[in-house]
Image (cartoon, rainbow, N blue to C red; front, side):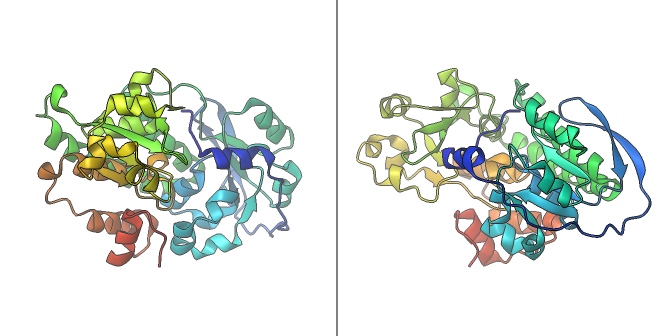
Length: 357
């Protein structure tokens, strides 16, 4: 599935220089055997096992490795991942992981110097060829084509993504993945059980905005659109006909006049809450504007998306989810999957899009 990053990050992808200075670490692993896996692009490849030294470059690949309890295997990661406040708070060991400054076009010599056993990467053909020609086993864990076409496909895709990581990382990760699948299924079933009786004509409309002025929106076939659907809402930006994300005009937002406005990948809701033009929208008048949580990774772009679904559902239909305690739910998730004891105060900070304090 094609993924979207904030424009500033995209620029950094393209123009930042490589900065990888770690020297190779002595390999103390057991004698290697081979394991054949199928990556997200459908390619079969054989990896030396165990895979002890991993470089996580694609999108939320750091978070997936962390989710599966295997962060100690990381020797390199996308530079944006190692500096995130909740990453640093939940995994002090991230300080030992080398940041890769040009993740979409990595310096192969630098990755070889890390003693890399496996690179977790996108399906970018030229870069894949360069990595593999250098002898770096590379697994596609993010796709730029083949977006799921409905919620059933999206659910299957979410699990397939996690399964590929688990296949790379071995039995312990596979067991953890099964635990996550069970949790995921339980939460989807819980939400669906509450919203199933809401007629389509009465489902809440929403946009999920991003960008400096809040005029970027996630549209059809995006993660966000599916999370909104699973939460019982209707992503009105699907009407643009654009896939994944697009920029819209203020006039278009006014014409939509959504019931709720969710904002992601933004540090402040001020552009909407205090914008003169936005003030005429019913979501603003009714105080139904919410800046979405941002944890180990964007909640709209990682395994934490299952928490985002719960968050969205409760904001859209508070009367149906009165017993849902998002503080406790977030604490439980971080303990269960990240092995991190998140205090109630920290959970509230995270839910309010704040860094740990």
